[in-house]
Image (cartoon, rainbow over all chains, first blue to last red; front, side):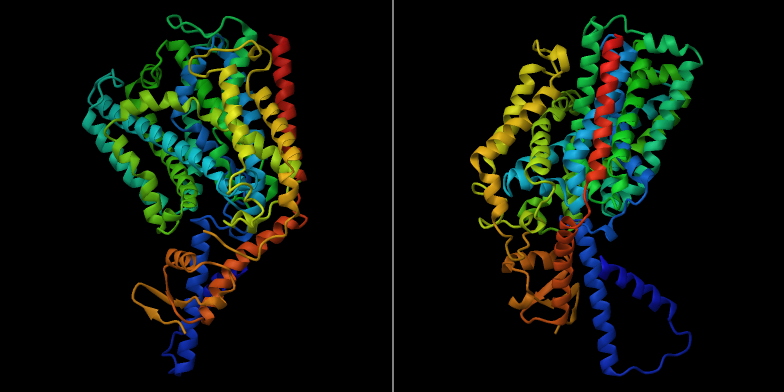
Length: 522
Length: 94
């Protein structure tokens, strides 16, 4: 914001002009002027904080991601966190390790490219959060459905990461005490203490807002990739690359012996992984300063980072036969190197955790009650469930991981709706004022604030997807074999939404209405 | 006129604020910014108004301006088409 820049400029100028001799006595008017300027600066700075820690549009001059690498590492951090190792374990059971890795990378890349188009581009253009961007399609109240999905995703992935990180800390202590079976002999009290300390650290860091996310992920994601590269190098010291890429687990039944179906399954898992970024990408992309770094950093960074770590985990699982990452880690790296590796992974996970808290805290401010609270209280609300998870880490991993397998499925329909609405109906033009207008005179009011057509399409798309493919039971319908489930479901969702909106005439009516006089609803 | 109080700034938010907000909303914004609302309009109130108006108006201009998304759309499509082509190639190889 210009005012913000002026305020910062004035501040530095006045710092330089601090007198070194006793200043002359100032009259009352001058003093009042100084106080007034100070208060004006306070207000501008508070407006800046309110924007970065709230839902107001972030202007280009206020955005923090101006470099390709910094945005890429933040996006990569979401894919490189510890759960990528669990995904890798699943990839190893597809039946062909190299097909699984390449297919998963391709699918993640495709999913991320589509999510970038649907969510990243409008959030960048208007500097708004994902939920606010979705209001154009879902309605100012209907977007709360999306908000629910975002908050659940943040809580789900964030708490799984807390549980995994805490158990890793327990494993470090077990290894330090000479127990080689670190995965099974972790001390419960150590795990609880580690989870509580981690929760406190993450909350404290999240108070610093998105800049903390940028700084932490800038070294966190490269560290995760470096660790995976080290593990790969250790494996290559004992096995050839060819044997790693063709290794199979003996005692676990593979998902399919058919190479074509193996590829389709791997790509489908990748698609789903890409769609799990739909709730998070907008909250980060609104902080990007230049359009040249909006698409490629997240697509390349997230897909390559996630696929590389999961790929290393898949090879490690296949070569050792151990499905628990902590078990194969100890087998490959030995106890002492494992302690160092896990220590680095724990620290690197913190950046992703802070990012989850930040995005969850921005989204949850759609609720009027929460929006009135100060930032520290909003972040505390988002992170509070981790205090319960601290005492039930294993139960969290057992139950929630399976639910999170459906996470990407939840966002396929809404991605289709957003694509169709933003590019084909609105021609890439949203009325920002109306996105913030909770009034029946607003453009995106539809029916009592909800676009039931969009809601029906996203519910129908989710149901249709699950009919074609269940990612937990791996049950597939016949059409799945040809092109998976995401592609047909996404295409049909776009077509149905467009047709229904045109037939109902609701899009034409809302576009024809003039914008309201400025009405800000926070 | 605003004055410094313990814990925050007193700032007036009368109807001259310019932004059509309910009393509760104005109070909500002010409280989030650590500003205590008062009964009379002031210069500081106008600053607050300007800050909020700038945030919305400038972004609206940005949305209507030539900041077109063609480059980003083409970039996304390159990734999608490239990924699909690799998918087809891999499927053919298998």
